[in-house]
Length: 168
Image 1 (cartoon, rainbow, N blue to C red):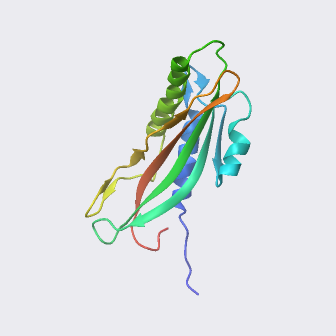
Image 2 (cartoon, rainbow, N blue to C red):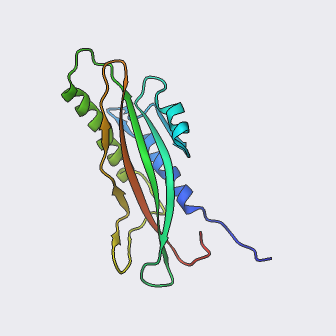
């Protein structure tokens, strides 16, 4: 039998993203009341509409492997969907204010991830494409009425490189 080690870098990156979001504050107030990891939409639904909010669920999608240059290295990226939710509590606020408040947590999320320590993240290129260290998908907003939850979803890809095919 061959002895192997498992680096589990994709999980470490997701954990770094979670840590960055947990640590994020705006004017000494936490950006999120709760930041959880999930594997299914059902798990997301069980946690994102709890408490006062805002909340964030990190939904794991996949880890994709490719071969960048030089050939001895393996380029990968882990893809997650971030589901952000905030309870609408502003009485009489119009759609504009609710969109503004939802975009604040979208932009705060991006700032927190970029400011966080993603130790293993690294951009890389193959013959067809350059993979940046952090890539964001377009956010989709669902704005709700007072007393209900507004939500935003956006994809996040974090790239990294391993030195050989047995360093996963």
